[in-house]
Length: 264
Image (cartoon, rainbow, N blue to C red; front, top):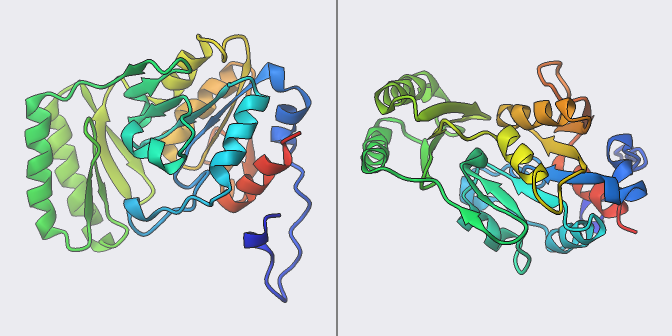
């Protein structure tokens, strides 16, 4: 357990850091590839999207684990790639951003999503509409737009109706994603499952079995991919029976500690 996360006086001592779902990463690193969501998985959720905190030790831990896996570690996130890189500097990992709409492979080759003028205009309209939703936060991700309503729960229905209207007007090239206190419009071809499959078709991921770790409904497609391909799927948080994940880890803090114990 890291020094930052020692139990407080009077709390029960956490159980030992033994996670069978991840132990193969240490025992057989040449056979496995690791795919990690960021918000709510590697990092604790924050009140605002830009307020997330990256523990100082985490980038180095991920870099060391990536080297142990021969480079077969990728981040798969709803964030844009340009937002992700500063979080884990000075290291740059293979990453799928915007739920797979953009992707940078292990060789550094980057595929970005196209942003048509009509989508840019739609984002501006949503920004104007958000004035009527006090506390709501509109996050412009480039080729996606998200409305966070953690501080505007009373406006959830109204936000949902507005986003549904916009997705119907946008047409079949766009998809509506719902997550934890957020509704997002992103490219229809994008999914985290497809991103995992694309990585697995390339070196150094090719020929390996995937372990996918996430916390939200947007991670279900990569859970499904891992299950189908003979890998392992892990959900962060309490397993409630509404997930395809076959294992669970209680919190991002616990996951961070477990990842540290896997290093040889």
